[in-house]
Image 1: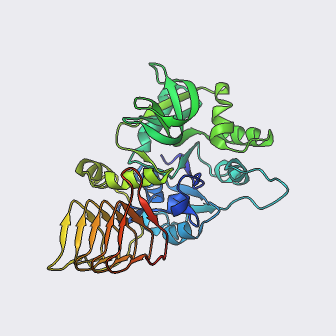
Image 2: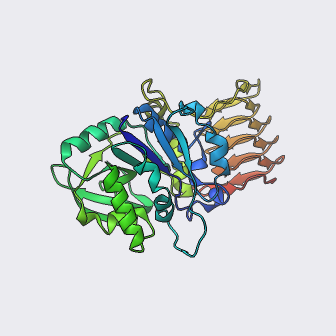
Image 3: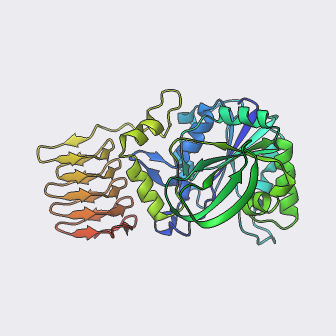
Amino acid sequence: MKQVVGIINLQEDNSLIRELAATRAVEALPFAGRYRLVDFAVSNMVNSGMSLVGLLLPDFSRAVLDHIRSGKDWDLARRREGLTYLPAALPDNDSRKGDLKDIYANLDFAELSGKQYVLLTNASYIYNIDFEKVLEFHKASDTDITMVYSVVNANRKGKSMVIETNEQGKVTDLAEVTNIKAGQKMVMGAYLMPVPTFAYLVRSTYERGGQDFLLDALLRRGNEFKISAFEHKGYFAHINSTLGFYEANRDCLKPEVWEELFMNNERPIFTKIKDEVPVQYKETAEVKNSLIANGCEIRGTVENSIIFRGVTVEKGAVVKDSILMQRCNVQEGARVEGVICDKNVIITKNRWLKGAENYPYIVTKNARI
């Protein structure tokens, strides 16, 4: 994978997750107690042996910059190669939206990298993969572009790209759908191709008026290229909606999912290191089937929940089927069930909050209820 340059696209559509991503990139959302979504894309590339990675920055980039910083925690703070931030295109008379304008503005990063291939990924997908196998598949397939896909095991909502393939793994049809059905092959936002192919595809599509890499470059012009598809057979989730975020976090409470994502010694998921004290479980604490990060103090009841760093659950408080992000405080006698609390939320004494069965109640950052 030393011959591959990585570009991580941090420009996910936030229209279905606006409550949590109004002032941060979707890829900067906290996940599973101590991680952020972007950790998976960066870690997958580093674990696969890639040494040159570019982050295509979103409009709201402060959270990403604060989290990744020099890339030291991913072993990307290097004198040669390492991590590069790719800024958004400068404002001009071109009012087109979409990610293609920003990819086009940073095209020289790939062209001058000295690498043979480029791997473009979207960081709103959760999975643990060895991209070395994708590269081997690509070389053996005699193809122009290789996509990574997974077979969906249950119906999902939200825009997705689905494909059909033949027995040789060649893509025979691509389509965008608003709802995906169990059994369909869903593209996982990862595309491998030679650098010249990538440069031609981006440049020619943008200069013909294109706006979006996936829709305008791949979907509308896919018949110009030989495209193959590599199947990822492990766990994956796409965080493109509030419900998707909630369900993917709760999937981590399943031992088999947690083990696959985070317990692989050869492919660990790295994140920003914070030195904090271990969780303090007091005498009145009662915890069942939950993930609780360092720096928390638990005096109440926590069940089937994800608790991030620095959260306090006071005596007599109950947290059930919920996600509490950093530094939340659930005061004495309060009860939250089916709730997502963003950072620094205070749930005051004896207050009860409950979300719907299939849709969590959202409490925005810094709120006091």
